[in-house]
Image (tube, rainbow, N blue to C red; front, side, top):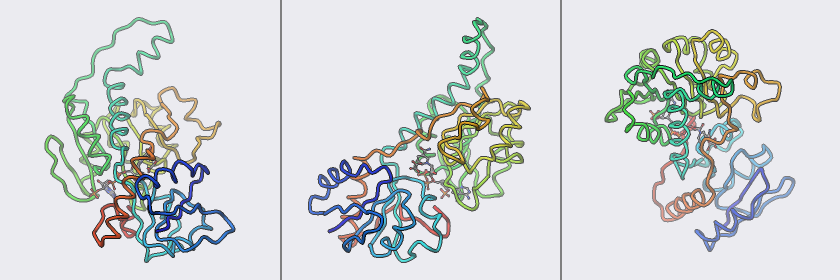
Length: 310
Ligand code: NDP
Ligand code: OXD
């Protein structure tokens, strides 16, 4: 069996080594621009260059080394339709997301962001505690990652809410779904956490009109994709005080340009797209297990629905 591998960072050796561990009979071929690879059975990519698309038409399945699929689906009709695209499901990312979001939520709930500012100003001034019943956490997206984040938050006793495309029932979580459920979901959410895939339906979903439905003094945590948030709208609503603060891990342009106004806004906390990083060993293990299932004629999870966009 041959696996065609592309890594934008060029660091292919550790991936080849790990594939050797989980699929010892497979040969891993590194894709190189301007060369024609030998016939391959599977491709493993993240956000491949357009020049690789023709080679992706020759494999049985293309595996993504991430959870989001927008980096590949952006090619639209140029992407071979007959080859399934299979994304990572959790693979060690869900616990990282749970850590990141729990940290952001507790930081705002216990007002550590305000105490950090006070400490820098040499101020000693205890602030009143937020009321936990009013500190509802709302997850946009209740999938592999959003579901794990909700589980992690459950023991703290915040009112939990979730919004998804299809109807769900999750113990301890008030669930909303579809376009009809969005307004009610937003109106009762104090901390909005975005963990949606980026699709035509979710692009710009956190815009001025939707953020205005959140209660006064709401918080935003975006760990999905930068294009979910209308960035100028967020700045306007932060300056007006409607949004108290935001923690952003993802941006429309990454790395975030040095002139971007977010850098100057103290109520915006920025991290460089690290909320849940691809773990190589876990990812290779998951991909290898799926390859073995496909070879055995079994079904696998994680196949991307091109119409839905995730
Ligand atoms: P899943 O596909 O498992 O879950 C997606 C969730 O979003 C589902 O609950 C789905 O609803 C919901 N959803 C999708 N479209 C809509 C819609 N139009 N309206 C309402 N709900 C919708 O994805 P993951 O949890 O694995 O990942 C989520 C995203 O997180 C990724 O797409 C990626 O962009 C981002 N990510 C960011 C990382 C980072 O480091 N910042 C790392 C990894 C991922 P339903 O359940 O009904 O299908
Ligand atoms: C992903 C990511 O989608 O790293 O996996 O953003």
